[in-house]
Each structure stands twice: as structure tokens, then as C-alpha cells.
Amino acid sequence: MSLQHFSHQHPLVFIESQCHEIEKVYCFGCGELVSGSSFGCVECGFYLHKQCAEAPAEMNHPFHRNHNLNLLTRNPYWGGCICDFCGKTCENFVYHCSCKLDFHIKCALFSHSIAEKRNAEFQDIPRIDPSINTGNVTEELKKAECFACWQPLLYSVYFSPNSGFYLHAKCVDLPAEINRHFHQEHPLFLQFNSQRLSCKICKEPQRRGFVYCCSLCKFALHIQCATIPTKINQPFHREHPVLLQAVDECLPCQICQETTNLNDVVYFCSICKFVLHIRCVSSPPIIEDKLDHEHPFTLFPRQFFTFLLLLYLFLYYCSKLIIKLD
Image (tube, rainbow, N blue to C red; front, side, top):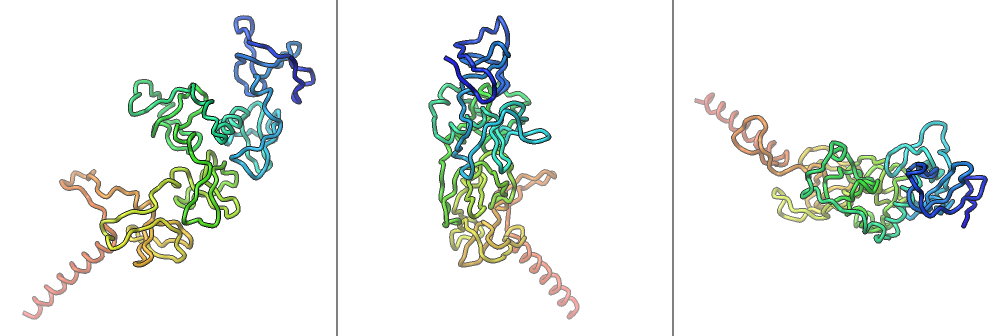
């Protein structure tokens, strides 16, 4: 069996398995050591893994619905090229889009499998629970981040790094589409962040990995931000529930007093015009003191301290007045 591949002038012959004892050869597609089935031209020393040889020249990727990805034998730029999935340099075949998205051939194929929910392909990859398996945690793993959400890998159960991919198990099982009440116009699709949009909730950019996105509205949410609670109860605002929503006016946050911008997504009580930044709600309600103070500190809205200050000033001036009158 032979294959005429666009990247090589000669037909490539199918090789059932490579004998490493005789000669180590590397795949021109992904750059890794050839093992298992491959296609090769012995005369030129050109080899491709079977998976790399059979990869489509043009890919319609579910995580990038706007354009097709084209398979190139080298990156199209004068300088280097970074994979938008794993963040490493692309030195061999590249899946490229005109909107400047680039992927290693294996990263494009692997992420396509995630998008298509071909979970059978992940069955043989061991899953590691960091709360249980702490014996083999290296410095590299401590610094590693999930290729999907770019949060620390050790935050939750993850696939074995031996697979070549740093991924949380939960990120592989993410739904392809979600709906959020603060963006009712269109559903949000799990996508590569090709438009380099900042998250509407935390305002932080994320160049690589996945986001939930509406391309028409240029509305994006980080994976972790898309899953925060839509309703919270606050001890200093018990009258009504506080809901996650976009606000159409500029109001001060009740904790930090910074004014929100139009259409910011915040926790909001429309009846009381009560606003809380999500980052402020994320602050722990009680913290232990780092300065040798004997009691813990409890979080209160700033108005509470304004009230105490006014009360203090009133009592102070009142006492002065009494003294003066005497």
C-alpha cells in the first residue's frame, strides 16, 4: 500500500512498524520519534506517522467555525510560530488559518477529537487525582497549566502528561454550547479565542485555550468564569437575591466602590441598585490576620465603615460641644 502525500515528491510506502534497533527515524509531520504504523520514502529518509499522513489537507474544526484550517509543511511567517493550543513552538507541519491561528498537527487532531466528543480515544490515558497522587509531582507539573482553560493543572483531576497534553479531565467533557441569561441574543460556543477577546466577566485576555464565545457580538467568557454561580446570597444584603447580570448603568461596587462600566457583568440587585464586582465577591468573607492580630477580619461593604466613621465624628464633636457648653 502506498500514498501520494502533498508534502513529498515520491509515493510513501506503508510500514507496519518501525524497528528502532536498526535506525531511529522521526516523523516530518509532528517531529516525534516514529513508532507503530507509518508511511515512508526510504530513499529520501522521509517518514510520517500514519495519523499524520492521513490528516486532512483542510480541516473544518468545530472549535473554529469561521474558517477552515489548512495544513502547511512549515509555518507561514518569517519568524517563529507558536501553537495556539499548547503554547510551544511549531517546527514541523502546521494547521494554519488566515486569522493567525496556528496548531501543531497533533494538537489540531487531538482538539478535534475533544470537540467531536470521541471520548473512546481518551480511555487509555490514565487520569491522575492531585489530591491523592502527590508522590510524583515535579517542579514542571507544579508550573504546568491546562491547555484548555490555562488554569494550573494540579487544580483538579488531569490526564497523564505522558500523553503529551496537559489537560484537566473536566475540560475534555465541557459542553459544546451553553446559554447565559446575560447574553440572551445568541448561544455561546466553545471555541479557540481567535479574536483574542477579553473575558466579559473578569476582563482578562486569554490568547490560547478555549473560551465560550459569541463571534457575532464579540462576547467571550473564560471556562472558569462561565461556570460561576448565577445567584448569590450576601449577609449584608438579605432583602433580595443578588443575580449575575449585565448592568445598563454605571454604579459603584458596594465593596470596593469602583464604578462599573456599561454592560459589565456583575452581581446586581435591580430593586436596590446594589452592585458587587465578581472579583470582590470572590474575596473570602473572613481572613486570618497576618500581622499578629488576635481576631480574624470580616469583610463588610465600605458604607459600613463610612457609617462608623460618621458616628465616631458625631460623638467626638458632640462631646466637644458638651465640654464647651459646660
